[in-house]
Length: 446
Image 1 (cartoon, helix red, strand yellow):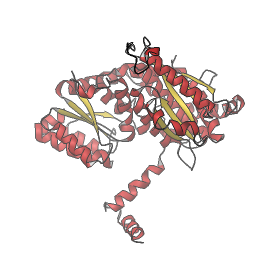
Image 2 (cartoon, helix red, strand yellow):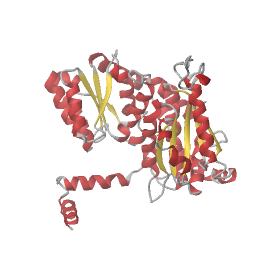
Image 3 (cartoon, helix red, strand yellow):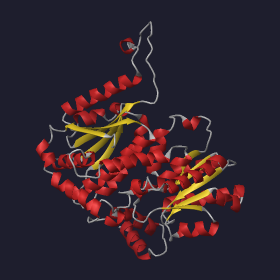
Image 4 (cartoon, one colour):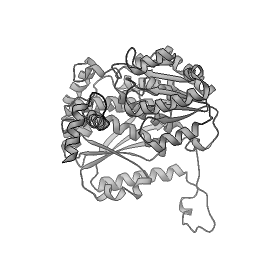
């Protein structure tokens, strides 16, 4: 059974238990659509049983390929954007030493590129890698997505100049389509080690495929434990029963949305969870923001953001609700010392663990926000570990599918993402976009 817990008692000032339970039938129907593959977007349900169907052989292959890069490289650059970047970044940041970037490493440090079109960013990255042993994990189903394709063009050329084409080919892993696309063709021509992005898994649901598993393994973390955690949550949420935390979360957030709470703020009181929030924002924003509907996903890192966003959350427009991720057990122990002069007036907490103070800040914040009219749910995870992160990832993924179907949108497409691309291609005079280019230039000339 999964160990992630959900408490939604502090939403009952905004919605009633009856409001939430009125969505039970819709939630059951959503689970049935997922399990039977009868809902919209059913050709992208490969993530649903991915944990239980991921073979040990694949995980062994991932670990072996990752170990080869770790043993031969100082740095490995994971190139990808959106779901091809955020899931791995979330897990690696959550599990890493907070100051790993400034400390010597026994293995390769994982860096990221292709998640932006930042000229200074790419220049600085190339300067860092100059004369260093580095490798590349390039992630793209097509191989033609603009941001990662630009980064790969630069870094591939740089690597080949530094070590030669033959050695460079040994240091590049391509994670791409099984049989088609520019990156698949290049990988076969150059002899890159490859892993497949399943056709039926969309980018934002892909962290438990090689898309996320390879960079996470390169960073030195236990991908088998990550998948084990996801398997536990898959099993725990397979049936539409009263203990299904996925259904409880999906029902509650949709009840709040219907009551006028249009913004969900994901809150953490643990600095290492920042990129979990970034991954979650893409997952829910891209899945539910359709047909002029959908909860807007936002996030804060507390207590840091209590000194910047706290005023708005406490006293601003009451269109928000919060979902707080709380971590029960910390990896380290640090006790606040006593000071004879006590000029900072902190001796009243001397002898307490830092986490005890943090937990009281968390509880105090939740009480204040609930009193201020902010409905609040609490997701509890036992600790930050590969297993618990695997559970959390699968929890959010399945809840997203259920919630999207309750909202009556297709949670698995993203038609709106293409709008900016068409304009960008037209402005850059990409071949095949001549008509669009003429139209947009005429619009700009007005």
